Image 1 (cartoon, rainbow, N blue to C red):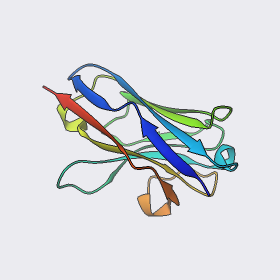
Image 2 (cartoon, rainbow, N blue to C red):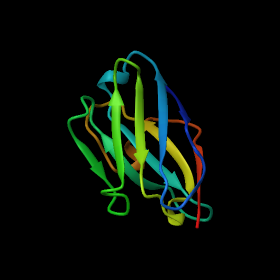
Image 3 (tube, rainbow, N blue to C red):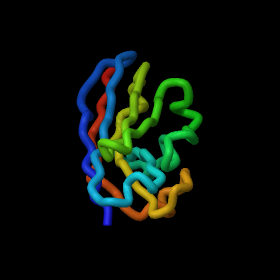
Image 4 (spheres, rainbow, N blue to C red):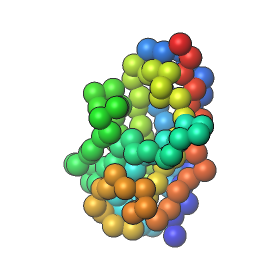
Length: 124
Protein backbone atom coordinates (compact mmCIF):
# COMPACT_ATOMS: atom_id res chain seq x y z
CA UNK A 1 0.00 0.00 0.00
CA UNK A 2 1.22 3.51 -0.86
CA UNK A 3 -0.20 6.74 0.51
CA UNK A 4 0.52 10.00 -1.30
CA UNK A 5 0.33 13.56 0.02
CA UNK A 6 0.85 16.52 -2.29
CA UNK A 7 1.97 19.98 -1.24
CA UNK A 8 3.29 23.18 -2.74
CA UNK A 9 0.29 24.45 -4.62
CA UNK A 10 -0.88 28.03 -4.44
CA UNK A 11 -1.70 31.23 -6.29
CA UNK A 12 0.98 32.69 -8.55
CA UNK A 13 1.16 35.20 -11.36
CA UNK A 14 1.79 34.10 -14.90
CA UNK A 15 5.47 33.68 -15.67
CA UNK A 16 6.37 32.64 -12.15
CA UNK A 17 7.31 29.22 -10.77
CA UNK A 18 6.08 26.67 -8.25
CA UNK A 19 7.45 23.38 -7.05
CA UNK A 20 5.04 20.65 -6.08
CA UNK A 21 6.05 17.84 -3.78
CA UNK A 22 4.49 14.44 -3.27
CA UNK A 23 5.46 12.55 -0.14
CA UNK A 24 4.89 8.83 -0.29
CA UNK A 25 4.61 6.31 2.47
CA UNK A 26 5.13 2.64 1.87
CA UNK A 27 8.16 0.49 1.32
CA UNK A 28 7.56 0.08 -2.41
CA UNK A 29 8.07 3.72 -3.38
CA UNK A 30 11.59 3.28 -4.73
CA UNK A 31 10.40 0.64 -7.19
CA UNK A 32 7.30 2.55 -8.30
CA UNK A 33 6.87 4.67 -11.38
CA UNK A 34 5.28 7.99 -10.46
CA UNK A 35 3.18 10.49 -12.32
CA UNK A 36 1.62 13.90 -12.09
CA UNK A 37 -1.81 14.60 -13.53
CA UNK A 38 -4.05 17.65 -13.38
CA UNK A 39 -7.73 18.43 -13.63
CA UNK A 40 -9.26 21.80 -14.31
CA UNK A 41 -12.91 22.59 -13.52
CA UNK A 42 -15.20 21.07 -16.10
CA UNK A 43 -12.38 19.16 -17.77
CA UNK A 44 -11.10 15.62 -17.66
CA UNK A 45 -8.01 14.65 -15.75
CA UNK A 46 -4.97 14.95 -17.98
CA UNK A 47 -1.44 13.63 -17.93
CA UNK A 48 1.36 16.04 -17.03
CA UNK A 49 4.55 14.06 -16.41
CA UNK A 50 5.84 10.65 -15.40
CA UNK A 51 9.11 9.21 -14.12
CA UNK A 52 10.47 5.70 -13.77
CA UNK A 53 11.73 4.15 -10.54
CA UNK A 54 15.29 5.43 -10.94
CA UNK A 55 14.55 8.86 -12.33
CA UNK A 56 16.37 7.96 -15.51
CA UNK A 57 13.34 8.13 -17.77
CA UNK A 58 10.89 11.00 -17.82
CA UNK A 59 8.04 11.89 -20.16
CA UNK A 60 5.92 15.00 -20.46
CA UNK A 61 2.73 16.23 -22.00
CA UNK A 62 3.41 18.49 -24.95
CA UNK A 63 1.69 21.37 -23.17
CA UNK A 64 4.30 21.41 -20.38
CA UNK A 65 7.42 20.16 -22.16
CA UNK A 66 10.31 22.56 -21.63
CA UNK A 67 8.58 24.28 -18.71
CA UNK A 68 7.97 21.50 -16.17
CA UNK A 69 10.46 19.04 -14.72
CA UNK A 70 9.61 15.88 -12.80
CA UNK A 71 12.19 14.41 -10.43
CA UNK A 72 12.37 12.12 -7.43
CA UNK A 73 14.42 11.49 -4.33
CA UNK A 74 14.00 7.87 -3.31
CA UNK A 75 15.87 8.45 -0.05
CA UNK A 76 13.14 10.91 0.93
CA UNK A 77 10.25 9.00 -0.67
CA UNK A 78 9.34 12.15 -2.53
CA UNK A 79 8.59 13.10 -6.12
CA UNK A 80 8.67 16.69 -7.32
CA UNK A 81 7.20 18.74 -10.12
CA UNK A 82 9.09 21.94 -10.85
CA UNK A 83 6.83 24.24 -12.82
CA UNK A 84 8.38 27.25 -14.54
CA UNK A 85 6.93 29.95 -16.76
CA UNK A 86 3.45 29.18 -15.52
CA UNK A 87 0.47 30.14 -17.66
CA UNK A 88 -3.18 30.72 -16.73
CA UNK A 89 -4.07 27.52 -18.57
CA UNK A 90 -1.94 25.59 -16.07
CA UNK A 91 -4.57 26.35 -13.43
CA UNK A 92 -5.85 23.02 -12.10
CA UNK A 93 -5.84 20.61 -9.21
CA UNK A 94 -2.60 18.63 -9.47
CA UNK A 95 -2.53 14.99 -8.46
CA UNK A 96 0.37 12.69 -7.70
CA UNK A 97 -0.01 9.02 -8.61
CA UNK A 98 1.96 5.82 -8.17
CA UNK A 99 2.11 2.56 -10.06
CA UNK A 100 2.89 -0.86 -8.64
CA UNK A 101 5.39 -1.31 -11.47
CA UNK A 102 8.57 0.61 -12.28
CA UNK A 103 7.47 1.49 -15.83
CA UNK A 104 6.29 5.05 -16.38
CA UNK A 105 2.94 5.68 -18.02
CA UNK A 106 0.86 8.58 -19.28
CA UNK A 107 -2.42 6.68 -18.77
CA UNK A 108 -4.30 7.53 -15.61
CA UNK A 109 -6.06 4.17 -15.44
CA UNK A 110 -2.69 2.41 -15.14
CA UNK A 111 -1.97 4.06 -11.79
CA UNK A 112 -2.85 2.28 -8.58
CA UNK A 113 -2.57 4.97 -5.93
CA UNK A 114 -3.58 8.63 -5.93
CA UNK A 115 -3.13 11.61 -3.68
CA UNK A 116 -5.83 14.09 -2.77
CA UNK A 117 -4.42 16.83 -4.98
CA UNK A 118 -3.07 20.33 -4.54
CA UNK A 119 -4.56 23.39 -6.19
CA UNK A 120 -2.48 25.54 -8.53
CA UNK A 121 -3.96 28.84 -9.68
CA UNK A 122 -2.13 31.04 -12.17
CA UNK A 123 -3.38 34.59 -12.58
CA UNK A 124 -2.84 36.61 -15.73
